[in-house]
Length: 159
Image (cartoon, rainbow, N blue to C red; front, side, top):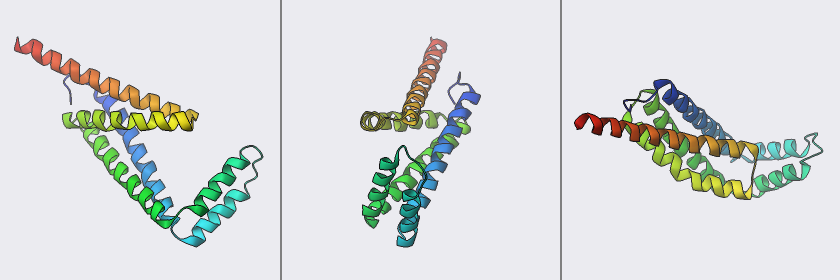
C-alpha cells in the first residue's frame, strides 16, 4: 500500500472490483447456459411476453440478437467475462490487502478500459454506463494521486 493511502478507500475500491467480478461470473454462467437451445428459447419466449409497453422494441431486438447469435460467440463472451472476472478479483485481492502492485495493476487495467467505455457510451448511452465511467475515472485519478504523493514523500525523505 502506498504510504499515505487510506486503507478504507482502497477497500472500497476492492469491493467495487469484487462486485464487478461477481457480476461478470454471473454473466458467464448465463452466457454458457444460453449455449443450450432450450434455455435460449425459454429466455426469448420470456422476453417476448414481458408486460412492458415502453421499450418493447428494444426487448424484441434483444430477443432477435439472442436467437441469432452463434454458440461460438456465446463462448467468446463467456470466456472474456471469466478473464475479466479473474483480473478484477486479483485487483480486488491486492487492494484489499494493501499491496502496492495492486495499485499499479488497477491503474493500468482500469485506464486501459476507459476508451472502450467511452466508445460504448457514445453509441449506447445509459445512466449506469455513465456512472461506471465516472467511478472508473475517479479510481484511476485517486490511485495516481496516491502513488505520486507516495513518491513525493519518499523523495522528500531522501533529501
